[in-house]
Length: 146
Image (cartoon, rainbow, N blue to C red):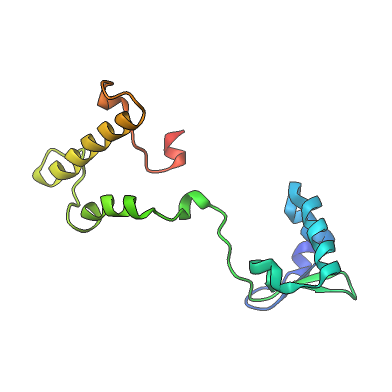
């Protein structure tokens, strides 16, 4: 690990890591990563790799330079695009009805009714229209549903 820290610069400056360091960081994907680097070195076609174009291979010392690389966020659950139909169904509750559906006051009535209708829609979709709607639970995230 010490070699990796020593070869990394802080801030907006370039980082230079050897292929061994990057393979170590890649963990289980190291074989694939090393193959990708070798293939890239063979082809020297930087335009076909999209977001990985910021990686610059140096033939002389077998290192990779990463400068001003684009950020890639790998949590697709956190960044999944919403389909237009889902967005349309959610818009009233993002713009007008802010109440908690679990609350008994008037602000929670419209969201509660929408949740009840959504439960019935899920049961219809599953082919169980006569099942108890309270058996359908909505969660905010994957962690919450574990």
